[in-house]
Length: 486
Image (cartoon, rainbow, N blue to C red; front, side, top):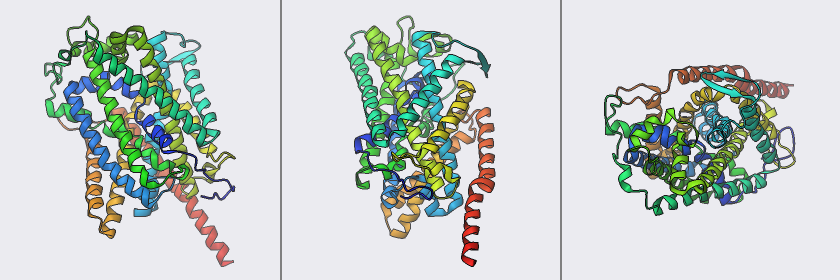
């Protein structure tokens, strides 16, 4: 695809394995190692988590079916943005891209600053030096910010060298990530001190401090599906850089989803089965975790140490760091391509569409790095509020892709796509509804802080489209009309 301001273009250098690694590396980030202790087991127990994540996996496979159909129809960088624009017009295309970019962009600083958390857990206060301040109860240190921002700048440079090099780096890191998890799974199964009886109770026990029934527990984990699996949908952002047919895309996406679901469930069961010996049950340990520090404060790290000692801790630490880095690389790549596509279409300034000699949209990447670095300065608490909105952005992207597929399927008389499109649309809206509308007994909606930030982001989108994005496009059209008249 040609660019207005330069004759460079995206280069087809990605193999199916590279694209799968970029997608899977986005699905499994830092949160996959933290959510078992802070969300999954705390809300639903091992069986509730198993059921919820299997249901979420099946929903994502339905949505993936719609993605594969739209990718085959429009194999263009921009993905959901292109689908929504072609099916429903520019306004809908911008809305989809605006919220999807929030979903993608929020994960970059979240993974970068997670490096600080793993360093705190394993190495104590080694990076807690220099001036510091507190935001929403979280201490922000100069040393830790330098680590996080340095990691993002480094991978911005790596990305600028070309998508072929980026794809190889991502593939190697995913091998470390997945290999380490498989070793820990094997170690847990083979450890004679780990018993299946440790998984009881299978659901979170209802008591004076916890009132959710079984159905509510499953739903509480199920609604995290968009947040947990966001990343498989980065595949369409890479289609103009992939050197294989769009017919193979469905296999790439589906395997990234299935492997992601397997990892989420496995890590939750490991954290539940191998809790520290000083506790009598996993509920006792999970509810005491907020009072713990070091590796004991992260259930998956604690479990790995329990089953394999220092060797297990080293292996899982390598996997965690690899997961953080693959998340940075994957979402950095996807976000920059989304912004590039919007600029190429005139939705945002053409500055974002600049491509360097290696076929990389470096200006869009620089924007991602600057915004992510500024976000890091606000601390993990604020970023947690932003990340909570990622599920909304992902749900909007899923919904637009599904309903776009249904629209085209209706005209083409494709009953299978029509059914899956409408089903994916309703499921996506349903998950977004549960996050946006408080429901008695569920307690899964966004926090007040996240609501406020969502309103602010929506207002910014209206202003930007009126005076920045759509305004730019209208100016371009008016100039073209004037030149024609002359």
